[in-house]
Image 1 (spheres, rainbow, N blue to C red):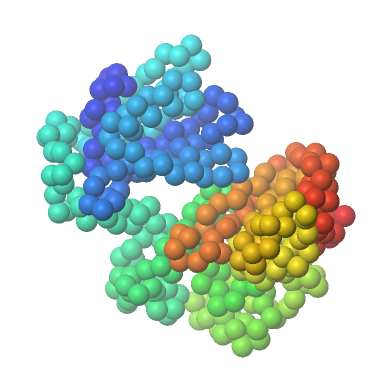
Image 2 (cartoon, rainbow, N blue to C red):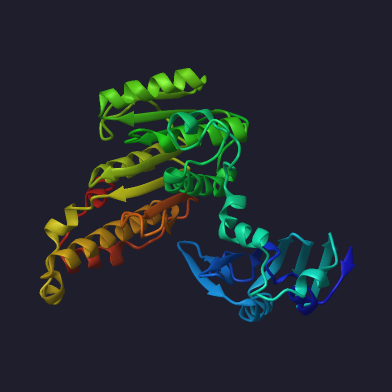
Length: 394
C-alpha cells in the first residue's frame, strides 16, 4: 500500500480507465450525503458524471477531467471525509482527519502512466464500447446471465443477452433494484420480511424484486402482489408457481380495503392511478412500514381543486395547471410522510424522455416527525385544496 498525494492520485486515475469514485462520510450531515462519479461518453467526448445525493434529491453534473479534479479537491476539503476510487488501473482510498490531514492509499494493477498518455480523443474502441455501455457494470442484474422470468417476459434471450427492443425495460428493472439496494440495511435477515406491491399489474418489477432479494441476496421474504385485474393476477400466480417462487403470491383486491396482513416491512406502489397512491401510502403508514417506494401516476385530484387569484394567469393554461398539480401532489405527499417520521426523497425513476411519470418517492422510517403542519396548511389554503392523503392521515 503506497501513500501518495491527492493531486497525484487524481492525475493517475481521472481518465477513461476509471470505473467509479464514491465520496462519503459528510462533514455536515444535513447537506450532501454522498457523491458518485463515473465516466461516460456524450457525443463521442469523455466526460465524468457526478451524481450528488441530498436527503431528498439527487442532482447530476457532467465535468471534464480538469473540472472533476477541481471538484473532488474541493469536496475533500471540508465537505466529505472519505473517497473510494475503483479503476481498471487499481483502487485507492482517501481519508481526511478531523484536523484536515489527508491520507491517500493506492493499490495499482498496472503502471498508470501507460494509460495516462492517452488523450480524450484517443480512446480505444474497446474502451469506447465500455464507456458507451458503462451502466452495464452497475446493473444489479448483470447482462449475460439468463434469468427465467426475464426470458419469459421477452427481455432476455435464452443465453442471457438483452433483446434490443427491450433495453428500456431492462434498465427500468435495474434502476428500480438500485433503489431497493440502498435500503437493504432496513430489512432484517433474521426473520421474514413482508412486502406488499399494490397495483402490481404484469409484475415485471415484482418478480425482479423477489429474484433480487431472495435469490441473489438471500433475504427471507414474503411478497404479496395485489391488483384489480383478475386475469393478470391468475397469470402472475402461475408464473410464480412455475419458477418455484413459493413466497411470492398474487391476489385480486383493492388497495383501500386490503387487510390480509397485520404488519408490513415494505410497501411498493408503482403507477397506482390518482388517489389510489394515497390509499397505499396511508396503509403503509398505518402498518408502520419501514420502507415505502411509490411511483405516482395520473395525479388528477388537485387539478380539479386548485384555485388561486394570484396564479390565475398561469393556471389558465390547462397543460401548465395539470403539471403543476402533479408536482404539488407529490411534493405534499412527501411532506406528509415526513410529518409521520419518514425521511422522504423525490428521485428520478427513469429518464424523462421515456415518460413524464418518472418521479419516485422513497420514504424510510426514522421516527423523527417533521413539524411542518403550519407550512402545509398555508399551502393548502393558498391553493384551496384538500389532498386525499392529508384527509386520510388526519
